[in-house]
Amino acid sequence: MFCRFNFILFLKSCEFMEIRYINDIELLSNENAEEYGTFISNNLDSTIYHTTYWKNIVEKKFAFKPYYIISRNQNDEICAVLPLFYVNNCLGKRLESISYSPYGGGIGKKIYIKDLYEKALKLRKHLNCKSLITREVSGKYDSIFSDLNMVKIEKWFRQYSKITDPIKTWDLIDKSNRTNVRFGDRSKLTVETVKDQKGLREFYDLYLKIYTHLGFPVCSFDFFSEIWNNFHSKKLIEIFIARYDEKAISSTLNYLFNKTVYSANLGWDIKYSNLKPNNFIDWYLIKWCYINGYDYFDFGLTNVQNKGLFTYKNSFNTINESYSMYCYPKNVQYANKSDLIKNSGRFIISKLPVSFNRRFGMFLNKNFL
Image (cartoon, rainbow, N blue to C red; front, side, top):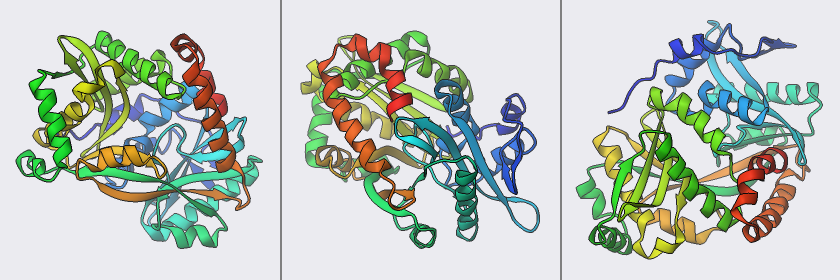
């Protein structure tokens, strides 16, 4: 069942940066944290990644410094916010919205969004950053970004499903997908919800192995343990594991926020791919969303070049929105340099043992992405 999260009690217990203003730019602080939390929780465009819950994880585990810009209307009420992190690694010094998350950008009415990004550009200059990077739904604020001389790079599709009665949804998904789900059912696959650290470890082992196989640097188990310890009691996270003969063969970590379930991290055992456990567990999740009162299941971002992944997600009758990166200045080489590092890194990591990724994955994420 969907739960309204108690931001106020949590926010009062957290420590935030003490600086409230830089020049005339208001930032998130202990003075306005409660007000910020209320604004985010009441705005349906916000995601789990816009919350201070996510801010605290990134700040603690990546040591990136947050600069969450706040704009107010004439009644002195928060009317728009822009979460940013100061990052300084091999890709240069930059302000980024939002670090280590698929989604980012400003939240609020369009008339206030330009003010946010004008302040972000001032902050970029004050902090001597090379670039400002943000991510938004393509076209939503293109005129604003154009006026601010920011370049648009169309990189992804956001793919999500509107949750309806599973009996009706079943007829809308691709026939091949239905066949795969039925095969998993005939193979007697089961799905269970993770309840403790033991289940979290099972998820992590599958995540570690498949990410290494695909060439992606992983986050540490401690990173996920921190998320689990802070999110689970607040009903902000659910992890599911698919089993075959009691063996964990597929897993998915999901965040819960504003009536949306966000698929965040996956893991599976490629030796059991013939059983189609990913189809089985994703269909289970869609049914779970319906039973528990959620409106959307978000499959996450898909790179425009990854046709296979796009087709897989689309087989669940997804809504597909173009999602873009916006960069300042226009001649910044961040995107090209980032893609080069990622592609080179994927080739190298996929050739290395799992133990290397377990030990150095977090370092790579902090310093090269």
